Length: 173
Image (cartoon, rainbow, N blue to C red):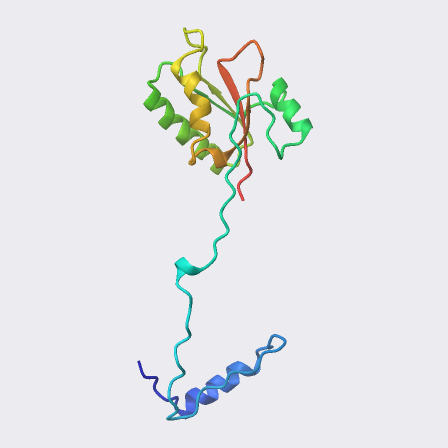
């Protein structure tokens, strides 16, 4: 694509515009090409696939009741002992696993967007030895790629109540 030459008015406007620009060290002022000069050759750029990428470091797996890295001991103690009150609570009793997961996902995204710090999810104890389906699935759901970046820590607020989990959410950036 050929460039058209600038007329005298455009050259004057360009000169006036560039007078107010402070150049970075080592740079020279860019003047428009003289009339009739061929356009400069296109600059070669590396394709996006050839550019080096810094891989995002995946977050460490989240375990309910285990102190995560990057959290100070005071916050962890307050969360684990139940002294950090939840700003919002989600009760998953009576839901199918699919509906519970969708509700959890929407709940955590909304809480994170609302900049809440601590929330509680009630799964219930369940009737089996290992607990109910939702209680068993919650740690797996929290480690999914779409939810793991939102949650910093998870614990039971009271050792005698494994049917509730308090979540400490990451601060939005």
